[in-house]
Image (cartoon, rainbow, N blue to C red; front, side, top):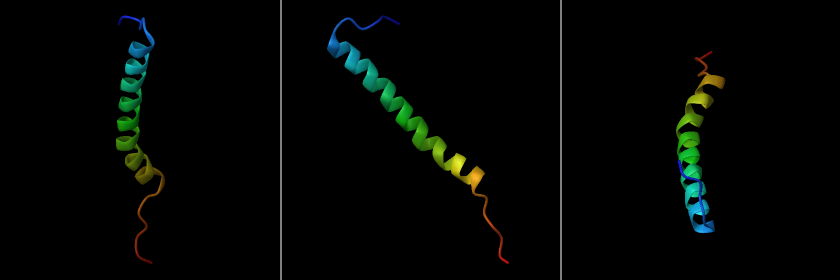
Length: 43
């Protein structure tokens, strides 16, 4: 991977990484939430 030379290239690369992290977080958070909060049966 080439390192960014200009500020514009740096911002584009950083935005790409941010979008990937945001999508990963939004898809993994519900899974994590269900693991820590299991459904409780009727009492």
